[in-house]
Length: 111
Image (cartoon, rainbow, N blue to C red; front, side, top):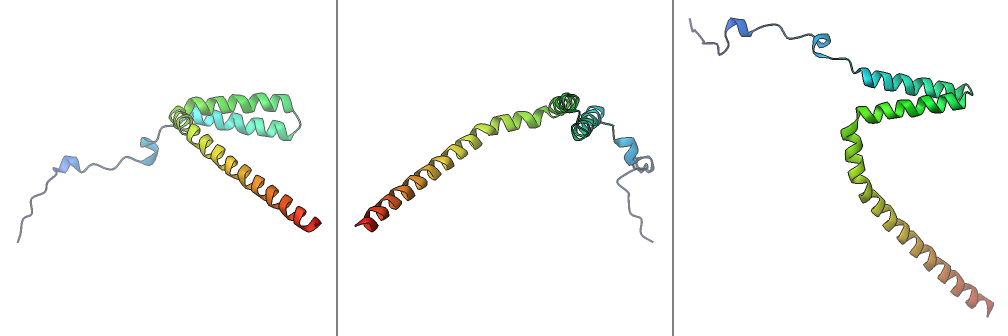
């Protein structure tokens, strides 16, 4: 018979905590979701002013709850704006080239 020493004592083999015991309720997130849902329903039912106020309140709660996400978006936003500006510049150059080609073609066909 072989005896294998255990690295843990018998007291360390306690039960795992249940999911309901380890999970805490995010009340701000629930309030934000409920407010956004209420705002959407108010907008759908035609109460635009109340729906807009509720949607703004829900959005504010979400922004307060997710400050790190908003901060990271805020820091990456200038890079995206630069990319869009560069893309729009390329589109503008392409449209100008097409217009010049069209004008040349029109002059050639008029002869």
